[in-house]
Figure 1 (cartoon, rainbow, N blue to C red):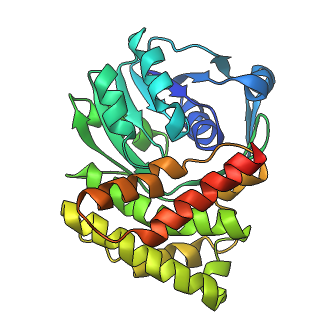
Figure 2 (cartoon, rainbow, N blue to C red):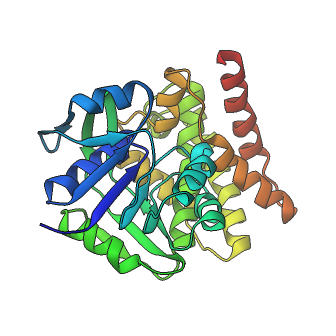
Length: 292
């Protein structure tokens, strides 16, 4: 039994899954949630899919002191999370979020920030019920201050595949480039990931977007083979409903500003053509507004 206290700030799908695996490994875990998820977690947290368990968990709507804090909120909530965590002693703070810029926001408020990217699949089936949909790899790396080994220890001893990388920003960009293609296309056309490969019109949009995003990443110094990366992910996750499509179906705000929006902003700085990314960004923003 470890004496480490672990905090999961943002008990959505991924946060709930990782929190459950970490608690199951013997750690003292505190979940931070809100709304109906908070109410459900006060009763219990159920995991289905690749692992099955039901846990009694500690949960509240406020940050607490911890040795390691995983931030798993939506990218547009990162600043609020950072401000809340700055009021307590959150220990080493590791982001496991989608999009570009989360670590920079956390680093403005907090001393020890570790960057992270995960390919684990988790879906919220209902409030308090998470489906462990796919095992992947979690890449972590130093961002500001120290503590990457502490984060690695927690994840590894909880049976989560983890790898420390030299430049975590590159991994963040790799994931964002793939997400810039799969997420908005599936959200706009309301299709599963695999449909992008089957439908030649969707694939043409995907390919053009991937090449744009790749050029922007290259301008920063990251050599990513975006078209092949998109193919691989779409094949592996063919039956998945992307997180952005899930948000659209639930009439929720998406993370488009931190994915395609961030790529467009970076591309325009470098005078690069980002018309496909720009269209997808605006199309998803329009869907949010129509539904909003």
